[in-house]
Length: 198
Image 1: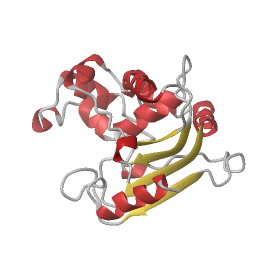
Image 2 (image 1 turned 45 degrees about the vertical axis):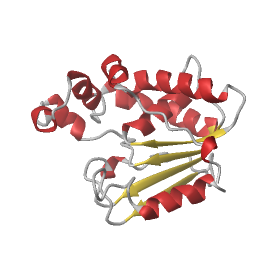
Image 3 (image 1 turned 90 degrees about the vertical axis):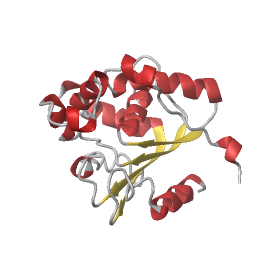
């Protein structure tokens, strides 16, 4: 009922060319959110795929974290990295998907063995992320071969410190993108609306 209160932040081709990883994107995201809302407003945020890693990185930025996040919704996010990163590294999908050099570099940085994805997944940064947000919702699709095995937010050993803060939601039949993509599924959209209107 209040569409003027929702903002869609996309990254341009120029942004993509200037970014090597979700860490670079996170600084752009933080500045755009601040430009729209200022520093003192609380807000909800939703990120899909690498966009969710961008959100996580912005929230734990060591210089100037993006604070004020109420509901953080991560949809099909490769929280622990993605095996597609290894395929990018081997240039297996570059030609088939017509990826730019920047996209290949960004993909490689999501390889589970890469230092960048490992850095965001240290216990300290996961703890800081959970401290800096009010609630976390992770949404996964059972047919999502791109990120399914890595989309769970692993916080083993911290559950007692953050009781009830993380909710995992799974949907049957949804893939990562495309016609059956998780962002196109009406069940997912309705679920996100329920979360954001709580």
